[in-house]
Image (cartoon, rainbow, N blue to C red; front, side):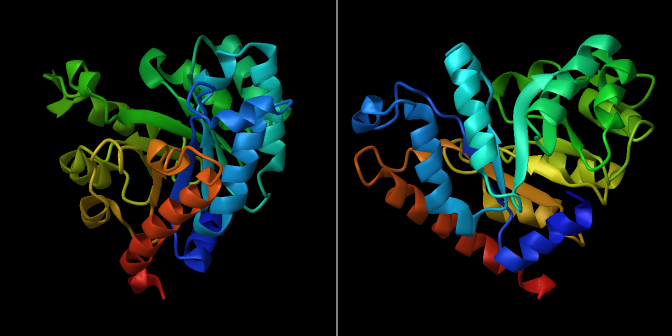
Length: 272
């Protein structure tokens, strides 16, 4: 999916919502446990209920890997079920030496046909560039994340560069790719980081976790992060998929997604 196609979907749906499919077998409604594949059945109903409000889905691979081969099967069925006009994100946070990264890229882009994958840039250029060899696919680099421990390293000042580590990561990465194949993770709980990120990559899309259960403000994210093509994909996981926990769980998820989409619609009025 190209940047222009992604923006077109955002305008058409009046949404830049990503639903995170962090599907925990211990949290899904009990009646689904009688299904042959409870994880897929849960995801299927969530997708059906939220499709009209979202432009992206993001399975977090940890929840599938933890279930072994059955989890991988559930993941494959989920990705196959997602409508083709929806942007898909493998939240894998992978990267390693070049030949290993090449295998990760093959797994997510060829075997699972994801549109994008989250990548940890800590090992540098040769760990990231194998993911960038696929036309029409995206790398989403971790930059300024929303977890508490992010400040342990990401905000450390690099003395000889006069900038923070996450800023240096982004600035270095634009030597490897551009706004047509690189996105960045910036947490909604760190709106001040959005200002500095936008000075480095004004045209790039940003994946924004942390709105909803983690307390991030959609209004602040839009104020400091939105660009001329919206440039935002805002993820909500627990706040949507666990909005309900009974037989009406999908309906409750649909309502939660719709509410967030309507708030996003107000932020997108400038693009009409």
